[in-house]
Image (cartoon, rainbow, N blue to C red; front, side, top):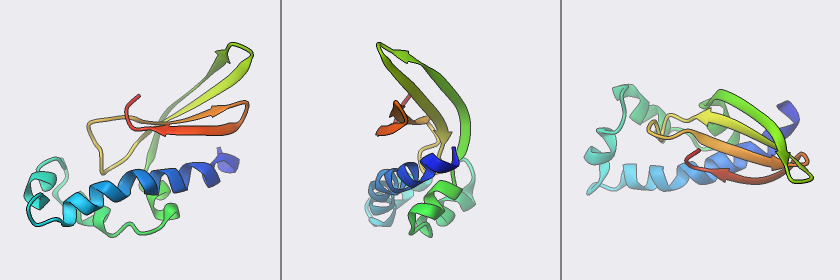
Length: 104
């Protein structure tokens, strides 16, 4: 998984940024705070500012590998603290990054 981190980390930061924008918006901050099971997680998520920090905040929940037609498909399932209701998935086809899906 180490070789794939260079693709996953920036995609996680891109996924996080709209959440942080909403968390900083005074009109939405309390609503956003209510989505966190751990009250301290809200403040920790706001401090994430680099792709490496976004990756470090994630937990790998599972890995699937199989064939999608003639292509080897790898799916890395991750839990992220800014979106506790969903499992985020990083898709690779033949070891090339395809997308980060916010709900797998």
